[in-house]
Amino acid sequence: MTDTTRLTATDSELRTTGAHAVSLPKIVSVAAIPYAIPYAKPLHFASGSIDVADNVLVQVTTEDGIVGIAEAPPRPYTYGETQESIVAAIDRLFAPVIVGLTPLDRERAREKVERTVANHTAKAALDMAMWDALGKTLGVSVHNLLGGYTGSLRVSHMLGFDPPQAVAEQAIALRDVLGITSFKIKVGQRPISRDVEVCRVVRDTLGDDVEIYIDGNRGWTASESAEALRMLSDVGLSRVEELCPADDVLGRRWLVAQCPVPFVADESAATPAEVTREILSGAANAISIKTARTGFSDSLRVANLAEGLGVETVIGNQIDAHVGTVCSLAFGAARRSTSRHAAELSNYLDMADHLLTEPLVIENGQMSVVPGPGLGIEIDPGKLAHYRTDR
Image (cartoon, rainbow, N blue to C red; front, side):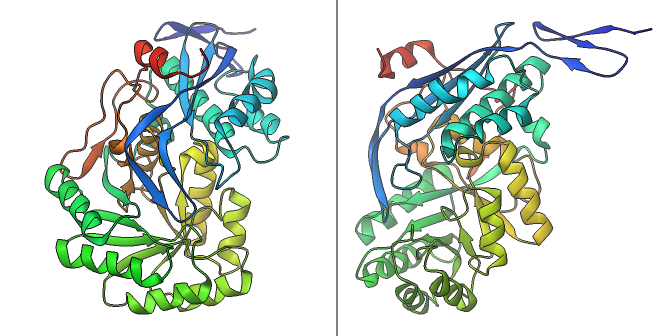
């Protein structure tokens, strides 16, 4: 005898049998919509620069009309993905194997898309859109589905290449207006004295009450990195990130062994397997988690792996636009281990506009998790129509 009960969640029905099998509405379409929003202030760094958010909005629609959303930022200088390649991968390779699954079938979806190598941000956006659809179907926030540890995160802001005083003035404005007191300074220029001077000016201008750390985007050699660390020994850096190339295997290990603060792996640790290799080889001792790269499902894997290894994690920024920022916030605030440090959430501030119906808010240096089912955000159809580039 089979006992069937019906549960209502928002405008969909979930059917539960005596065997506890749950059948959710199936995914009927997957859309990859390219758009472009200019940056009011371009960001320059060692591995590239960005002056327009030429991202891809990903929509996963179920048979009951629920639309899960996420976005993929192309980073050709990091992962080899372009806006065009993301759209092509989703339309031609991933959408056909995702349609027919339900938002609960994330592991089956992962198995299918992993048959194609790389394409990190395209895969991540699909995964997060499925989570958003699941949350909306159940009437539960993604933040709570992921763990729901805390309702807000401290914000850290990335500062790109600029003259020392200009960088310091930007940091002062962010501190005075938004209360941000944590700053990542992009380094990796030559001579290294240029970046050293920037760090010193920021520290001298803002004082000891702010956090400063640096990110080289693999721009220096191991020996240049070591010299920079010696020159910055009295500046009070909290951590450093990707100062030299990961494929300089011996140089990287030599550098990390003498680094006086945590050395964060970012671009070198794009998958759980790479995280394992970087940590166990001594090439890093902390990990940057970027939901734009590992989605929610693999970000959980990385966070659990790091916790098991006793490795600290930070929430990084893929130069995310507004949708990506909400994803990072929802994940980072969901777990104790990822909420300990200020999260890189604020670089959307440099964009000239956004796609959301409601703007994001930073108050007293904090961002609160957006309430509501799924990610809690909605896309403004008028703005999407204005900024999309496929029509």
